Length: 304
Image (cartoon, rainbow, N blue to C red; front, side, top):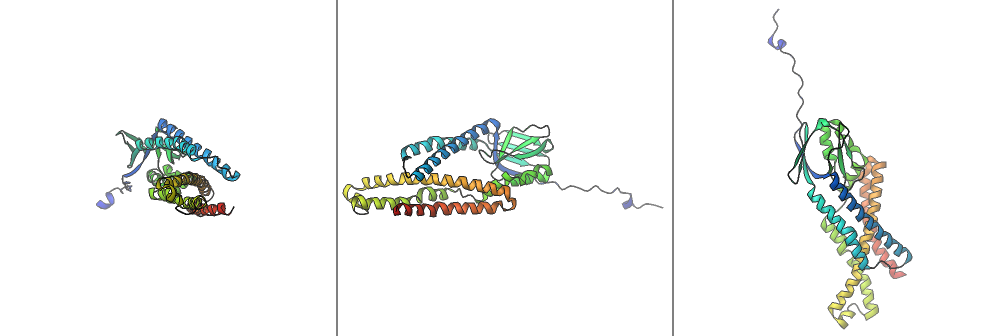
């Protein structure tokens, strides 16, 4: 009996749909550059911890040994300069990662290009020390770590893209440091106008209260010093009040930032599905304590 042509054809093997090419902007760090950036970040953080501790001791003892001059110099030299170095290194580390079906291609800012076959990558692991920011290290099947670490404020999209190509490469998307970094990127306000209001405009309010009280006590009216000595003397005195208030509030904000990050990291560890909620609550509590707490402290100083 004859066989039809349809029966004679072998069954076609199922086709796997190609994964579309994807691109991600991030920072690619060599081991040496990241080492310098980590060291500078630790110096900056250590300097802030030192001055925050000094401020807390002054508050608890009712003293004022931390004066604006040494504080400003210490913040500029010990924190500002190291963070400026980190910023310069980060700009130089800007890169783009492109993923196709089988290859990860790293395009560095200097024009260099590195291609890594995905078959040669065994795992993507979050940095244990998330400095100068959260990032990933890629380990090859030979056990060696690839030459560039990938800093990404939110590494989940990159890990999910890797997981679509090789499932094992996306496993780190559920890691506690990745969840913590994702919630941090989504919910921490770092726009210039937020910082300007928090550290420049808001300190004017407690400063104005203390300054006005000084004017009434020393000169008998809100504009007493101006009427006696002119605008230059009046504004110079206002500046002497504003500088310590603004710098003290900066240190207070750093203290609460540290607590917020610690609570958020703990929440990402203990309550994976609620990491964003914990972060949101910690951020709002920090704002409440900073703004309302500062005004309550100002009122308390007047009631002493």
